[in-house]
Every structure is written in C-alpha cells, then in structure tokens.
Image 1 (cartoon, rainbow, N blue to C red):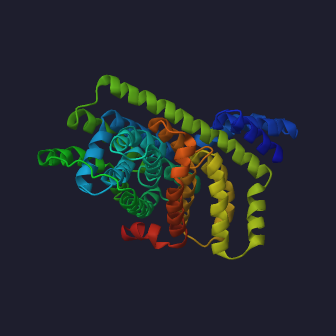
Image 2: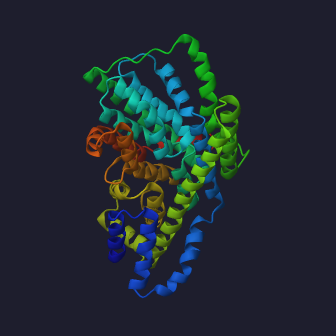
Image 3: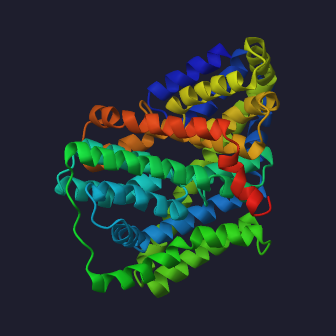
Length: 425
C-alpha cells in the first residue's frame, strides 16, 4: 500500500487531477504486485461505483443550483439578507454569513457558494473598508454551510454509500448549520466592534416588499425538497428532478432572467460538473477495492481498538485522521475512499449513523478552507485578488469556530438527531 500512496501523492504534486491520480495509482499497484489480471475488473468496478439510482439526484441538484445562479438569484438573496440584518456595525460581514446560509439551500456545493457569494460580497466589503483578506476568509468559511443542508451533494453520497436515509441526513445537518452560522455572526460582530467596521447602507422602504417576493420562492426550495421526501410525495431522486423544474419555473417566470442562452449554459455546466463528480466516484471505487484486497479497513479498525476502547477517544482520533485527509482530498473523493474504513470503525463509536454522517461531512468540508488543497480558499483568493497566504492566515480564527462546531456535532447527539426525531425519523 506504501507504493500506492507514493504514486498518488506524487501524481497530486505534479498537478494531475484527483480522479486520474486515483486511477493511475490503482493501475501501477496492480502491475507492481503482479495482480494485473484484476485489470479486467477495473471497468466493472468503476461502473459499479456509480451504478446507483440515487446518484441521479446529483446532476439534477447541480442543475437546480446552476439555473438559480443563471437567474441572478445570488443578488436577490444578498439584498434580502441586507434587509433582514438591518443597519448594525459590521453589517456587511453579517450579511455575508446570512446570505451564505440562505444560498446553502440552493447550491448544495461549497465551491459554487464561494464563487456566487464571493463575486458579490467580497468587492462590496472591500469598497466599504473591510480588509480584502478578511472578506475572502469569511466568504470561504460561510461556503461550507452549503454541504450541511439540502440539497447537499456530500450528504447524498454518504447516504448512498452507507444506506442511511437521505431525508434524515438533510434534516440532521440543519441545526449544526445554523449553529455554525450563529457562531460566525458573533465573530463578525465582535470583529466589527474591535476594528470599527462601518454601518451598511439602508434598504429603501419601497424595495423591501419586492425583495421578499423575489427571494422567498427560491428560499422555499429546501423546504420543498425535504417536505416532499418526508411526506412520501416523491423519492430523493424525484425530489432532485422537481427541484430542477422548480428552479427553471422560478427563473423563467418569476425573475424572468433566464434566457435560452443561460439555460443552455446551465445544462452545459451541469454536464461538465456531473462528469467530474462521477469520474472521481468511479476512480475512488477502484481504490476502495484495492483497500479491501489489502484488508486495510480491518487493520486500521484493529489498530484504533488497540489504542483505546473508549468511544470518545476513538471519535477524537477519527476526527483528527479525517481532518488530515481533508487537507489533501476533495470531499467526494475522500468519502468514497474513507467509507470502507469508516464502516469498520463505526460500530466502535456508539453513535447514530445520521450523527456520524454529519460529523464526517463537516470534517471533510473544513478541508475545503484549509491549505494546501482548500478549493474554496483558492476561489475566494482569486476573487479578492489576495495572496493565498494572507487569506489562510485570516481564516484561522474561523477554522477554530468550525472545529468547535465539529466537536459539538460529535459529542452532542441532540444537535443532529432532534430535528429528524421531531419530524418522525
């Protein structure tokens, strides 16, 4: 397995995309250990990795998010957030976090959220006197709220890999997302007081009704998704198709900003994004097969059991390992790679599968805002025209807030399980 890791890390250092790094490492491993006969099963394992009906939710939810973006929804959400926040010191920073929370129910992906919110909020905050690195860091941190609430692509993939109820996962992520949002708002307000951040401009009274009318239908999207699945009106896959149709209707009829060219671009972007996601899942499935050949999952589970029998110690160790994994791998690839190991470790922890899923996803999402492979950091650094080092330094206190939220999720079951239980999970 050492050779596999060396090839994989070397390929990543050379700038080879994750999917191809995984595939190349798998092929080299099979030939190096005279198991080339297993190459005949390579295509079969790749196809089996993505041959799941529920995975159809991914392209439909991506399409819904792209259509909403094309309909210029982000600007409507930001203005609506400004109306809700009002005129408080450091209000634009609070608007940034609130807008990220609202946009979470539309995008389902951290990178899409960082790009959409960042393109509007970072320049606005800089014009208002905020430090560009701080504005970029706050936007990046707010972007990881997206994968915690419906329609989260990471939660869908976790549900597919483990057989956990996707509707329970969607509900379970909502309270932790609001908790993280509240902590980020408190930090923004404290920072505003210390650094004397300015008051934002007031929203004219005549605009407020129009903002609410335009923003609220889009904000109902996660309610429709979870409500429809929960009541049995449609399955998760059907919910994704409904979400895409709903986004098309809103953008075309309510906002009237969706042109034929924009719709075509949204479909094209969806196709390319879906192809990338599915290729990663397919290649990572081959890696998971190799892990099984080497019996790595059971060996790691036995090693952890040898360290301690205490569940809380194992949870801390597991979170530490996942944080390191998230530093180098994109979350979807990390999920497919880690789940064979996590499935062996899970029975030792004594926690619910839904709570475990939120903990794993939040953990890997923190990797999206940490160097060296923090994709959200790269996105906001480019938008804010700031060196990655400055943004990484500015984001450190916010990473600490994310880690506090992670510990709350790991050790307070009610934080994730109360809402699914309340709604009949």
